[in-house]
Structures are given as C-alpha cells and as structure tokens.
Image 1 (spheres, rainbow, N blue to C red):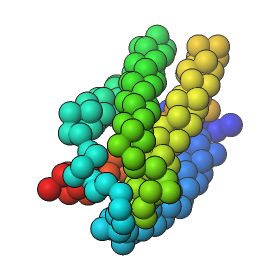
Image 2 (cartoon, one colour):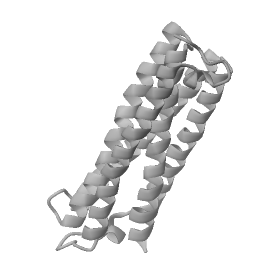
Image 3 (cartoon, rainbow, N blue to C red):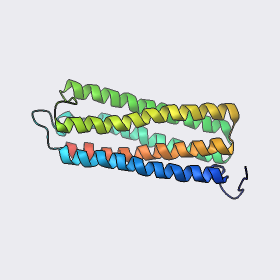
Image 4 (tube, one colour):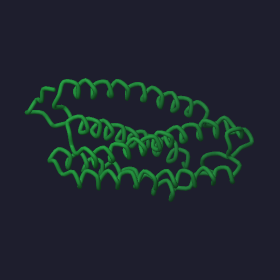
Length: 198
C-alpha cells in the first residue's frame, strides 16, 4: 500500500481515493431516490381525501428540535474528521459517540412524531398525502438508523485498531453519508414542514 504524503489520511492511498469516488457515485443514486420521493410528495401533497392536511398534523416545536439535533450532529461529525486528521484517537471516538447519540435523539423524536400522526388519523392508508409523507419521513429515518449502526462499527474499529488509512477512509465516507442525511432533512424541513404549515 503506497501512501501519498501530501493528502489527508482518508485520501492517502489510491484505493482510498477510488472508495471515495465510488461513494460519491452511490450518493448520486441516493439523490435520485430522495428526488423521486420529493417529486411524489409535491404531486400528492394536496390529495388529502377525507384525511388531515399537513397544517392540521404538523407541530413546529418537535420539528425545530429535530432539525437542531441533526444539524448539531453534522457539526460534531466534522469535529470527528478534524480530530482524525490530526491523529487524536480518543477525540474521534468521543465525537463519533456524540454524533450517534444525537442521531438516536433525532430518531426518538421521529418515532414520537409518527405516533402523533397515527393518533391524528394520518396513517399510510388514510390518503395519498399521508402515505407519501410517512414514506418520505420513514425512508429518511431508516437511513439515520442505518447510519447509527454503521458509525457504531467504525467507532469500534477505531477503538480496536486505531486510525489507519483504511479506517480513516471509512470514517470520512461515513461523514459524507451523515452530511447527506442532514442536507436531505433541510429539504424536508423547508418543503414539507414549513410549506405545509403555511
């Protein structure tokens, strides 16, 4: 394995660079997935039938908390990458742990939000609007849960093996995934919740 000294550790081998490029291509597919969900949502948002509208079921306070928690986790994962680049193993583990805890807080709020929607009569079969709303939110939430386990495995690898070029590459790719989830959430917050409350 030939190291390229002038690059950050996560880019320091040719294989690492190929892995990062491959992940960017994967994110392109993820953009298509969420793009399709958003296009479906915008098509079906007014098809409420006899079910509730967004304005009737959305509550701004929990959504603001979810947004703050997820954006904070994005900042913290950035701190983890910085700590990784300067070789601070304990700091990387700590920042990853905080990121994952914030991810769990976000998911717990989302589960509570789903329970609220069900209580308000907004289920998958209530209307086209509620079906696409729950599908879009559920898909994002499932990605966060997957990210939690992915980050947990990386954290355990760092603890066991330290910060190697291979693990640095995995950690950096995980951070790209986590930032992507935050960007998707900003779209959900802006075009689903804020627009729905107007």
